[in-house]
Length: 383
Image (cartoon, rainbow, N blue to C red; front, top):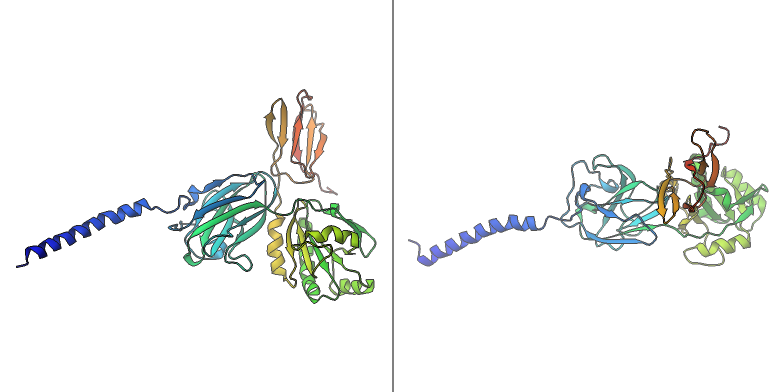
């Protein structure tokens, strides 16, 4: 017969097991995981990007939903979600730099987790385990942001959403090898790739077939390459233009223009420090990428350029009273779109009021004539 001590010990052990069985479910309920684990519970990010938006979060305990895509095409299962609506058109950088684990980053449009359309994604930023994407956001469009962990990793997240690029880029004008004037203002509302190169630079020549491919396939969509070479014999330049089947303008980089553009390098200088060096300007004319290590292949530049090519198919005028004045804004409109006005909707007589080139609003003062306003895209030449 067991002793009273043994019986008491057995009863105590049973009681502890029963207590553990009760506590474990309660502990699980007390730690449900991140609040934005599911797509439907995404955290809303303020749309204003005048300053960087930096958020801290965690994907510890996060799960994978039915129908959810693999972010950056990498199976995982620790995703958390944010949603952000752009207020204006412009290039945006979203990064997980500073996070404690190897991240995956996916940007989408769509209203359900099973109906998402990928905009851009990133596994690793070059040389890092964290992720970064650069793309053109369209005013009024809502983006779904997912952060996951590579192979199920989890930890603390730092998510930064920022307006990309350098806001002021000085204008320039040059004469190309055929005597035609080319200038920065020619490329408004285009993605512009400026290639600084030299005839003695092997990496420069290596990249040129890729630029020819991009010019061929993306020019009609609003993309342009311009080649700027340092002082050399013109016949050498023409030989490379012919042998490489160059289909974009080539011009000599004058000291005056070099002095304007060289300070935009990662290491500011009065001269271009390395060849090749590539600058990429977005549709708003901001410098959004600088590549100075040379010899990049077509895939590298395609991945960089295509997300910047996103183009709004249309915009809508929005109105807001400010005191006694009426303010018009146009999220989603593009440079070159036209605001027109009329005093009579039935007459069909519309007068141009403003062509959009860098404008973000139009204020109608108190006491202004009563008029109707509309936004339209210009008719392409020849139509």
